[in-house]
Length: 250
Image (tube, rainbow, N blue to C red; front, side, top):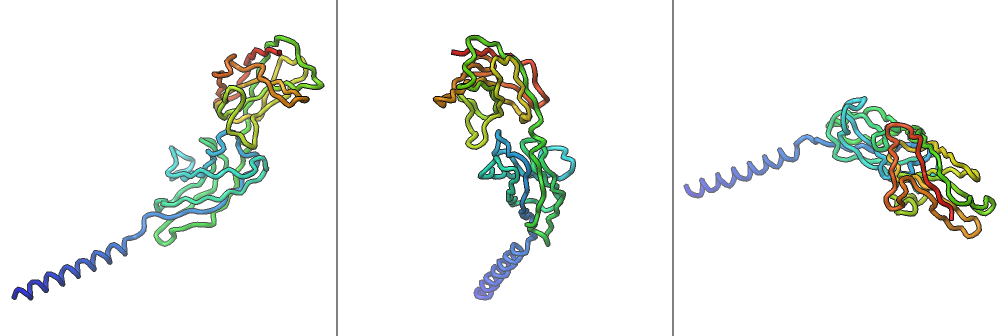
């Protein structure tokens, strides 16, 4: 009798274990994967280059933050005018999503919608185009208060530049291949205009003297007056004009 009870318990445990295993193995999948390529046209952003992203939205136009996103790897040569970038998004909930390429909150391209189901867990042929041309839309302008003697124009270039990457007191960091936007000034100029700027916060607006003979660059003026703590310029809401920069030549 004892053996029969023990045998029944052992058999029951095996059956229950097998049933649990079969149930676990047959649970329906709940996530999938999206893969594809985006062809970007225009110059890759010189600021925040690692913030170009692919985002997934549950409704379109978006009514809030994306359900999921991945940052895209900057190209080897950001100065090229066409860039083809691959992407992969894993652990995506099943359902329908709208795909968009963006830089921060600025839309660069819409990739349409895609649906993941239990029978279609992977979509790996997504392709669409995006453009950086919509980024370079802002203008920044102002005047210079000149002190000292303008350097010889045959051996020197004086220019105004602005950028949105980190400012280190003498120039911008984080732009190994694309420099900040700049404009060369005619000798004695007291007005400047920088066009095709990105709609972001620019960390400095500075004036430089480039010695063509010795290949040296000297900071001769900066917005706010303090090279260690320059005045920023916010171009997110529109163009900015009326800036004044004090410039002192050696």
